[in-house]
Image 1 (cartoon, helix red, strand yellow):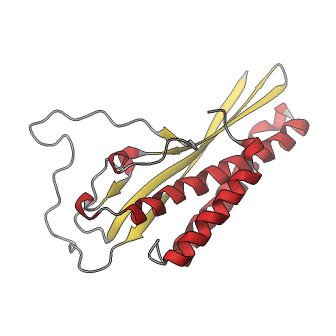
Image 2 (cartoon, one colour):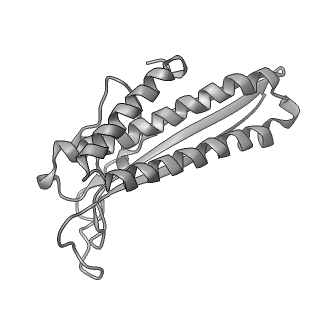
Length: 202
């Protein structure tokens, strides 16, 4: 049996409006560096249509010099295997609580969380696109040449996903343009519905 895993992480950020901490200011103590024992890192959260992100999911702490209001880290993990010359592939979109944060939870707004959730939803769109491509790939997969062919497939999807995340932030001004934010939400829901056949089992 031959198998391997590829992964590509996208970090999405929302910029602050107004004054921010300057580089060189003392950083907040990192988790686990004080007298309290370090907490184990939270496990990645798989995307779910029924389990939406909450402020408690953003467990990391920003550096003192960060100019961001929030940071979301999502990932698409793709795996492939050949057993007895039969190809199988797996794809999962996840959110990483240990690398995601709100700068100041006291200034949390539902609008900000909506923007971060949509970054995760866009990640799921591209996970479904990858699953869709794997259906075609599986029909003609050559197990003897699996790794380079699979890497080429995932590399293309990862590049499209990264461009889409950047375009989302640019067009919505990191969620501050509510009209564009609403448009992206509607378009993303349409894409998820169109790709429903390639959703992961819940």
